[in-house]
Amino acid sequence: MTLTSHNDTQARTALIEAEHISKSFSSADGSTLHVLDDVSIDLHAGEVVALLGRSGSGKSTLLRTLAGLIAPTSGEVRYRGRPLNGANPGAAMVFQSFALMPWLTVQDNVELGLRAAGVPRQERRERALAAIDGIGLDGFETAYPRELSGGMRQRVGFARALVLRPDVLMMDEPFSALDVLTSENLRAELIGLWAQPAFPTRCICIVTHNIEEAVLLADRVLLLGANPGHLRAEVPVDLPRPRDRRSPAFEAIVDRLYAALTGRDEQSAAERAPVPGPLTHPLPAATVGGLAGLVQIVHTHGGRADLPDLADELSFEVDDLLPLVDAARMLGLLEVDGAWALLTEAGRAWHAADILRSKELFAGMVVAHAPLVRTIVRALQNSEDGTLRDDFFRDLLRRGYGPDDIEKQLDIAIDWGRYGELFDYDADSGELMLAEVSQEQSG
Image (cartoon, rainbow, N blue to C red; front, side, top):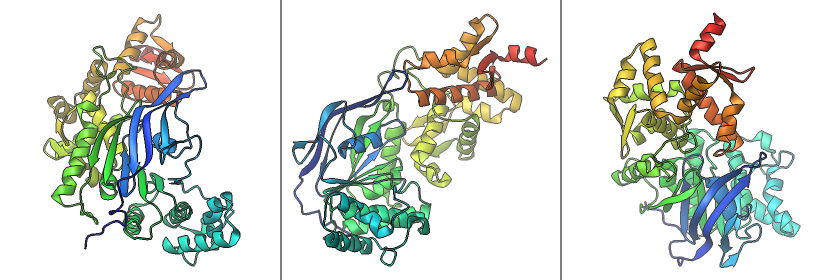
């Protein structure tokens, strides 16, 4: 049986329009963090839209901007043709963290938005009970959040949003805090609700970093690039519901999205700069152990692994797998062809090496291909005594990163440099030192 949405017959009406949206935040140190850059999208009646991208693509910031919870630095958001100057009256949000009031019952939590809107008590009660029943929580009206499982708490979040009868239901990774089976069940129930004529919303917009989730749910997938977030591609999903993960058409769309997220065109103009540097080529969030594990797995697959299949096999999501792939490609351990990861000769040599040789090979790779590690090594070599404080490198990175990303970049560089025995780090004093200087001091 093929499910069709009650919205299928609706005209393609633009409910929310965002034109040339950019968003920047000022850091405590006075620097500016650019999160979104010139994003233009429309959300129409009768469709489910997924915002898909890796970390740093500004998915959640964009969703909150569409909801009117964050004002854009430049550009304009319109709801039904009228510019937004505050919260979007036609949108309701479902959050990853459930965001329930622990001191309120299920019914009271569901009534919160209605109470804020000044809806009379009896109408609030009737609408809340109908929403609770519709989401499968009847019998739990007087329960408190602490008495509910994660899946049931998220159902309360759905009911609280749907009771407002919004034009657009916005969901920020609503299934990512749940176990696999609960997530799968709630996704299926959401699509079942969407197919019902009485479903009280005309459009769904969901943020996700799970490619299969996007293809399961969405009619359109908007693919966002990162640093700063920008719209890279729009991929239609013209498949009947319910969707079969094993069908060739489903797998083809998944492969297309993996290829887009891992492809060379993901590089921004800055990343294509002729001289790679720490500010233009950030280190992907990958540990040496994670890299070794990925190389081993690809080797076990005969040196050639399909990334969607590999992610499914390992129960990984895009934010877990792609940084490892990016790091392996940066260091020359893997090449990527579409959705395929291919082991290079350097990758085979590193996999086959004993521990000492592995460290030597890794040291050569990071000095050659990891700009921040190379910068640290050269700075230490040019210092008077082979040592420098970590604050020196924080100051260098501050021109291109926010405070959190500065720490992440330093942590990755220190992990890679230590493994390659290029330098050591004293966390207590905040001092980096060349490996030979560290050995002399310890001797």
